[in-house]
Length: 178
Image (cartoon, rainbow, N blue to C red):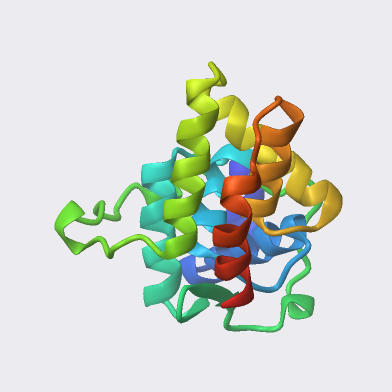
């Protein structure tokens, strides 16, 4: 039944992409996110698809001009209010079937915030916290207090007894540059 509904509502791939982007941004409660937030949000928070497929989706959204990239930030190229997303929307599983995966040679160098997040994640893994649990936890904290992902990671580590004072200046520098 769900597949039939999508065929009726989404007459072309661009409108499906708009609904997907609108559903993501509304769920996040933001109009601007980083690439990393987008990939983690689609794959870990919403569990719509694996991270590799999310990267394919991101490149498709950018090539179809559904999203705009401004430096390291992504924003919808349309008014979010113009799209009426159905309750419980989830993109169809075969949405990216025809798309090719981006080559690893095309990837760009990670932003400074990504390096910091990786460093904090490694510290959490050193405590025995699984990567997936760490991501779920910091995303939850980020949503709850409406803070940057690095701040949520620091709070999560501090809650687990880690002295985060050595990371404060680096995180402050990263966030103040945004």
